[in-house]
Image: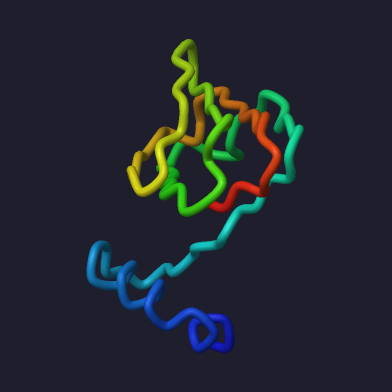
Length: 96
């Protein structure tokens, strides 16, 4: 509840899009030059939804055999159980 109070617009948007009992969302920041090594999620019951907010130039995400450049403001979802990794080759911090 404390974190929801810090980000009321984000929480309201999530609740409107996907109302549910389990609430889990976070902001992810990658510093310039970061490579998140290939990994898989702990289970096969989760979809990840990314909404790149700022600093996405030079960012890309690989899920399975497909790699995509991130686009600011374009939301996308992927199966967290598939192997995935991310790169951020820019001079500014990326926020998703």
